[in-house]
Length: 435
Image (tube, rainbow, N blue to C red; front, top):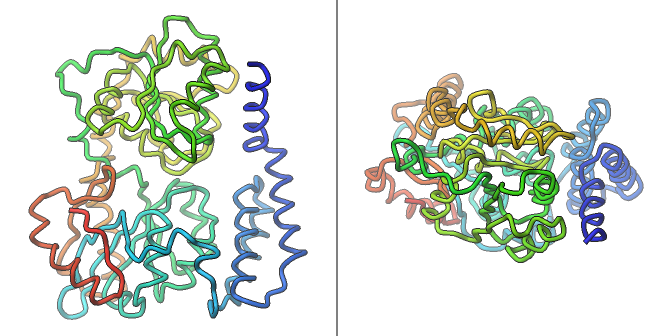
């Protein structure tokens, strides 16, 4: 047991601690200095991948400034002639765009439509197969990245290939000043991917709240970066009557059996229940039956699970040092941050006082729901369009996210359905319809 626990701890240290991150960042930059010869599109793409890897790991402003300058230099001379898509982005082979939605179709007199595309694989398929010159004349593009910080090759590819300016929402509000520095085409919309939750889907059924069966819920896939081990380590020091439900999906070969085995390494396997790949209704009911929700990852994107928990009226705890987009939603009404060396004590206190929080009420009062976010996106694009001399006579359709982008109003189906067929024929790539 000790050997397995030690192995997990070492891997965690190498991945997240400042010292190894600094070393790895320098090694990626040094590797690029030694290997880059600038002879082809693929050479430049490989260089940009090394430099963005280095930037993701960098921890000081001076290093980032130098890396951003190098990225801009590479981008200036990047020609995509003979670029090998399958070498760099093998998941873009299917000629279809998924997890995307048409929020507005083009209108007469040159009024552009609006296309929202989530996840890098999907926007790369659009860039690979679409008739981009024609598409950019007819549509404004809105991207939704999945990770933070935003230094990555797919975003740079969008900057290089898309013919005009485009919009992006964020995985972390802290990314807002970074994106324009690495690409002047980007127009940042200060919304998170987790701002599109429909509160009606997560509303507790009972007026007084759902019956509490579990002390802690963890809504997270079973990937290593979710760091279930951090909770297991803390749980070992907590009262024996505290019970946890883990609600997640198989990820990267890690499944419920993997998670159970890791819990056993820490001696807490008998205090956890696992709901693997549950239908949405069962997952939401299980989440609502917990007193608190906990996320123990240190670095990821927006993290929809945080907003979903809050709309379930379940307060959320995050690690104090975490870099997660929806951390901006955590305050004295919605949850708390756990101190690195007092996680067990802070969690016990959080559980004991869970009734002191009003997360759903705060989310609604502060316009963190899908309807409000749709209106904010509409106003941002409308303001930009009018400011650039583009006509605007119709607003965007409202959308929400669960588990893909969908229209809030079912009546939008009749209004927009024909545009999906026309889109495929006109721009050389179909969109999987999200109605």
